[in-house]
Length: 112
Length: 114
Image (cartoon, rainbow over all chains, first blue to last red; front, side, top):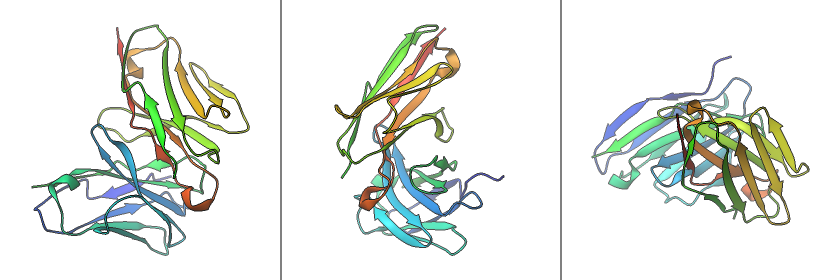
């Protein structure tokens, strides 16, 4: 069974640009969550999606948005990039809440 | 919303010693508490989890305890080995409501010295 796949693995963007990250969950998993990981801050929750609906959103500005498609694949978008957006963005899929979340390898975003 | 505090942020032990990492949570409705291990450059992976109807769970050298009254849970690693060196994250979530997603602590960097 294929694991969670995130693309691209690495991105370098300039301040003010926008970026779209993609996440393909494990087959059969309908729940996808996104996290931002930075040194010292751990894993900060961004969004949770289930069956194309956003169920929950973390405390991030409106520049961060996401969506989920009918095949459970998910994308997140960050507009007007800032230097502080540089981080590892991880997505995780699970069958449902309160079950094991499987993480992708992440997308390393660098904003210069 | 839920808030998870994790201590210590760094922990160094000698090979063969035990390691204990502690977490507290704020939402009494939380009922699922997983622990993830993240090795350098790799993705976080679940190592053990516990639900609120259980006080303790063991898996070989790893155990987790939960005190619902005090709202804290702990990870215990016995007979540590160098391959246990990694960052460990605790998390908490509820089964439903508006905060059903996992909320993570900030992590503990465990170093096991040979």
